[in-house]
Image 1 (tube, rainbow over the protein chains, first blue to last red):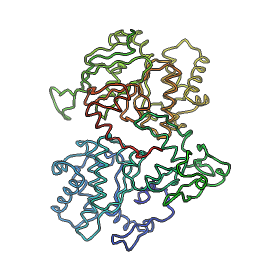
Image 2: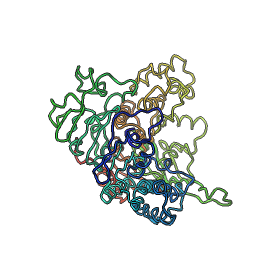
Image 3: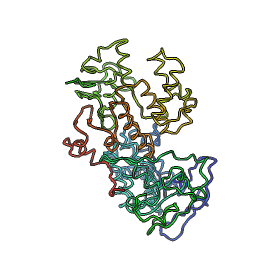
Image 4: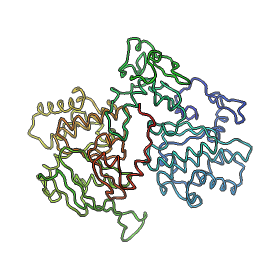
Amino acid sequence: MLALALMGLLPPGAKVFGEAWLANANGGLRVNLFALTERERIAIRGRDIAMIFQEPMTALNPVMRVGAQIAEAIRAHSANLASAEVDRHVLAALERAAVPDPAMRARQYPHQLSGGLRQRVMIAMALAAGAASITNGHCEPRLLIADEPTTALDVTVQKQILELLARLRRDLGLALLFITHDLGVVAQVADRIAVTYAGRIVEEGPAREVLAHPQHPYTAGLLRASPQLVRRKLEPIPGNVPSLTALPTGCAFEPRCALRRDECTTAMPELRNAGPEHRARCILVDCVSPGAAI
Amino acid sequence: MTAPLLEARNLRKTFSAPAGTFAMGERARVIAVEGASLDLAAGETLAIVGESGSGKTTLARMLLRLIEPDSGELLIEGRDFLAARGPALRALRREMQMVFQDPFGSLDPRMRVGAIVGEPLEIHEPQLSRAQRRDRVAEILRAVGMNEDAMTRYPHEFSGGQRQRIGIARALILRPRLVVADEPVSALDVSVGAQILELLQNLQRDFALTYLLISHSLPVVAQLATRIAVMQGGRIVETGPAEQVLGTPTHPYTQSLIAAIPVMPVEP
């Protein structure tokens, strides 16, 4: 939901409060994404900020060749490009996403591709518009939002896609906002982690720090509930995530928390400092030493 | 020595491949499962692991005779399951039940939970009175950690984890000996999935169940399985005790599966 808000793709009826700032290419000017007109936002979406989705089969148009779909993304931001130029950019985009035999794949339809190849096509499409408009004096795509991009894939294919994203990040200097429920994937891709619960960020900090010394009971609980290759006693978190229409008055995690205190029910805690660049939304942060068994 | 609960020898299943929308004549056959043999001893948990298209679901369906194998043998406690017909087949069927992946799609949205969980009793134990049936449903709901007042409510009133508990209650109400669980936690949140894995472990102990677990996730399998069979391209490529397959895999495909799992660098 946060990702859709940043992209300006929220469903009708949704309201956004607050600000999100996108730095200009040269690092000087910043724009507030929520203060943009629809036209300005369209120009940024797809060129500066791109997004890939969980299920590449439903996100791609089944009756359009994949090359044509990528061309569409390029033309949306560079309307005056000649066809030959667009074709060249389509092939370059597929190559960048490590699609083998790009000229042949560009003529195929999504159903002719495997799940991993479809996700590569999506990545190619997401990065194509920004890359093509470089020649028009614009900047590269700078932020890629990836919403569970490997959840629908087998582990061996997931590994290839994660490696591809890591390489693109390095080569293009891309920022990656990676949304996932898989803590193993998090450990592999992330520099920093933000853990959300019931609509709020409850913990954020450097990836290794958060995974090794979780400061919020929910993060600690998730880690203890995640199956690992070695059999061990899993400790499930009791209960269920509360409905967003019936949140508790205090901390949203309080009803499921083993460490709850009376004051937890009175108000939602603020994010508290729990270490260098590490913050958690829990009143116990000051009392609990790092890494203590929560 | 007693015969294994379930014994499969050289099971094979092919499907006809669509050769194109308007193709005529002979269609190509695609081999879904080939030469699959396995034993399932009472009380153990055998996990069938593989990536999409490896044939694990086809194999599990053949073991329950939800689809008929093209060839091969299938024995239940030494008796020929493939030859069973009519009442004998029905009697064997009640011994084996299934838990499905999707807790949303596998419960009829227009039936109350009491009717969903009690329906197998109507078919297999029609002599029960309403009150007896109600008691059995209440009892099994308690066993899966649900409140018995759930009986009068509809599936949409429950969360994914609670719905999966309802699906497990429906599978257990006939007191089967074998439960086939097809990806039982892959549609659930991590914290809730761990609850269901724990529940499955407790139920196995309390009801003396044998599990056949189908999963693409080795970490999930590691929590439950006593033995693991790894499938690739319709064949079982490696089988053995869980610790051995996970710890010292011998087949290159198993090794690549294990190497592809993202691991957390630190233990919490």
